[in-house]
Length: 223
Image (cartoon, rainbow, N blue to C red; front, top):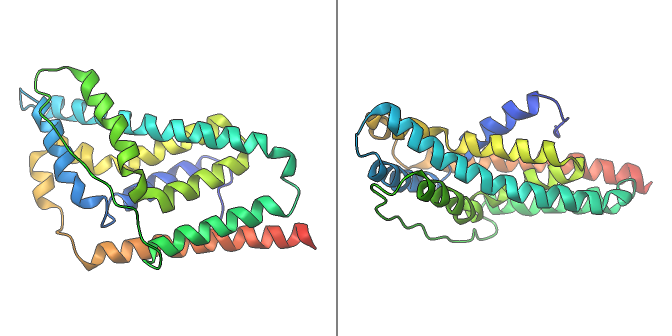
């Protein structure tokens, strides 16, 4: 079902962020992100590891929130068309497109991730790297991220859009927070395999369900 604008949406979106972090494109990057945080954790304390990981995740969340601002503004620009056939029809087709990417019917854009030693350079570089990584990872998360942007744009509410994408990014960063805080957590995570492909397909079916709702809405407005 589509987002309703209530508090339950934030729990759903946070869980979606956690699922996205275990997809084949994002999951293998986790050790790289942990290495970046570990490079800044000179004291090797768990509290500082958590704090540094949080700074990195907040940077990533801010990049997604920025995308949400553009989506909400675009939704307001086309708000006068909300009672016509075209907005839900276009949104439904976009969701189908994203689902096809998740099903591997369409190719997924590649990305490159690189890290560098930031030992002793303070928190600001860590935040900036998290902010940049949000855009670097966005091609991998494009199906789910794009779907959220479509849904939030239809709400035409900047605060809702920004806060929802912020929570989505926190869900994506939950595993990083645990791995950055507890050094043994990364080793306890399961290895890459078929289960990640299944997670991606579950998300694809969810996107198809959302697309169906938009198509039904478009049909009601057309007829």
